[in-house]
Length: 304
Image (cartoon, rainbow, N blue to C red):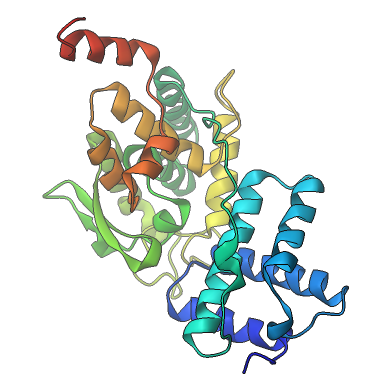
């Protein structure tokens, strides 16, 4: 089957990724990468799987880097290649895997911008002030959303996927369905619980037949809130805090992890809360202030 056209294989591979519960965002990214590879190869008269070798794959990656693609994007392209050819070999569509000879692209990871603890407090105070001024169900919902995002560090997709029965008030936990359909429990602090409980008292004002068991609802039609609405809400809310960076929901996730570490949490605990498969991801994703590092050093090192 190695003489099959590459373009004919792409839909089947994307369907395979969907069956593996790969996230829609990753499927779109890999699909776009592979479609660009197919165009690149076709421009050189190569359309079949058996015509592609290590040299052609290297040329495509090199063209991207020389054209200004970031190393992170190049690393993702490499992952797309490896996944595609591993699937092609496993399913008998290819006899060999030319991507096996490719070297990984070293990625420099810059520390993301984060909120300070003072800015996080100012953010919640600003939303609480808006709620006092307006007194609407919408303002109640918005405060609850921001409190939950900052308290739990959940992804925006995980927040919008929360249901009413995801909440366990007695244990102070919320059940979250993360990447790869992996479920985990995340704790919520008292301010977050109070905000959620106030929202639950007003939820009926936005609900409709389309609401189902969704915890957070959109304004139009009362359906489950769209992640894009949450992103706009976070950007707008941070605009209420003078000097705060313009961040999305992922910025609150990073702030939560950073502030946990600053408060003395260990890396494994933060890893569990964030739902990272590897602690290495957590190490790259979080940073600890120099003051915190110095305090740990002085406390733990025998020659401090």
